[in-house]
Length: 108
Image (cartoon, rainbow, N blue to C red; front, top):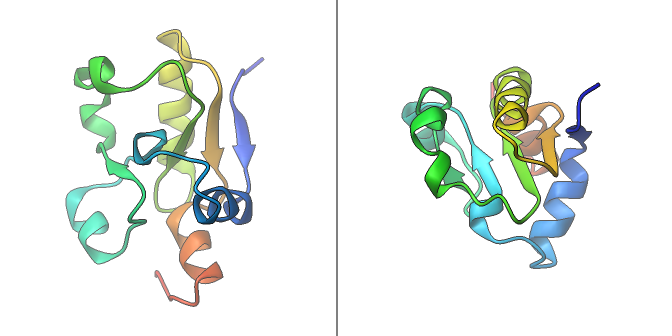
């Protein structure tokens, strides 16, 4: 059974608004052009294919919130990070499309 969980985009936006998360806790695993189109200011970009090379820069002592466009790539990254020993992983359900919609922006 997986140790990571699905996390609602509304809850992520609430934590960000309240200042309860640091940027390095919200990891966007989309590609650069997707990031350039729309992203959360309080997040970092680590495209999915760079995650294995970025393990040394990803904090393992705080909860992590992984986001992609719709939640598929971020789920795969949660699985991978879990296999590498990370815990307290949260896959943002619906990804940036859901977040954008909540903020009145048409993502796709």
